[in-house]
Amino acid sequence: MKKPTKVVKDYFIPHPENDYKPYILRVRTVAFVVLVAIVAESAFVFGAKYVLPRSKYFGIIQANVLVDESNQSRVTNGLPDLEVSPLLQQAAQEKANDMATKGYFAHTSPQGLTPWYWFQQVGYNFDYAGENLAVNFSDSQDVTTAWMNSPEHRANILSTDFTQIGIATAQGTYEGQPTTFVVEEFGTPAPATAPVAFVNTAAAATAPATAPAAKPVKPVATVPVIVSVQSSSAPAMQQTFIAVQSEATATAPASATATTTGAPISSTAPSVGVAATTPHPAQSTIIQQIISDPKALANDFYIFVMALFFIALVLNIFVNIRVQYPKLIAGGLLVIVVAGLCVMLNQNIGFLHTIIL
Image 1 (cartoon, rainbow, N blue to C red):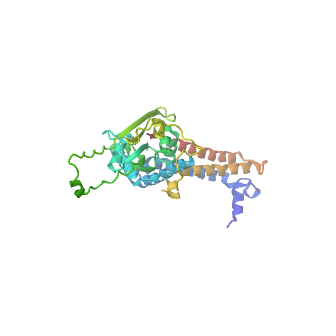
Image 2 (image 1 turned 180 degrees about the vertical axis):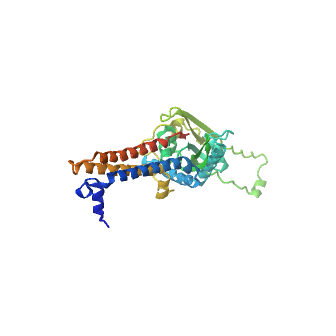
Image 3 (image 1 turned 135 degrees about the vertical axis):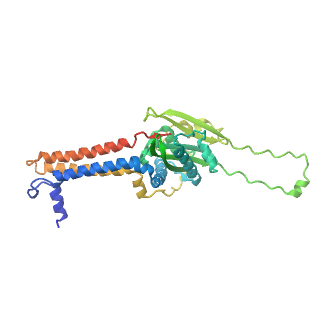
């Protein structure tokens, strides 16, 4: 058995024993690596477009990772992270299921159901609420990047008005193609109503009959605030951001509501009045983070191959500069070009026909 140092020397360094032809740059090795890259890229593209959109397990993982990525964006900007609300998760899941079942992608369903309908369905009473949507993404990091690059979606994620979050996904068909629908709900629970006061019946019997009746409590209404903008990253795509606040807080000036202005939030200091909180436990594991980001995993593999062959080429050229074999140099460059093209393809394929609302 050869020593590791001997193997490294034979594969990377030109010397008399390998006839000044490092094994890694020989035709057989180059052909094998190129074939592996082509097969791996084909498998990645097929998985990203056909396997992952149909995988329920992947959707669950993606939702967990997106919660962590949204909270990481808040921490990076000096804001406390959001608490995961089971009710908001349920509302997000029902909204995602509705879009997947009926094949639409919009804040308001074809039947006219607004985002706040799903909040009401699960019994989530709120002072503030917001919603981000995404479709046709196969990579969680791409979803977060797209949201953070949009002023309106970024304002939702970094809003100081929200204290809770819930994310869910559903697999369905949109515009004839299988896809994953992503729903991100934000909210701040409304304060609990005051308990009902029970009257002593004996004392009530002696009370004047003309006592005024209690004024009925007025149901809390919602005032939607809708801002429609044109995305700079996708000029042909109309993106809509919707935020809503309850009547109890609707009297505040519009400029005081970060979710309705779309103004950037400072990344250098926390907003005034934001109290530091203990970070909530991560929703995802390291393994889940890797699985939910297949593009990064594939690109890391290709970058590693490119670095390996770049080092081999440099050693081949400069260790013994008087002895050169053009075929070896061409083979090394071919591998680097193929791996680089795979990285470029992955960068573009992640954003083909992707939409956020």
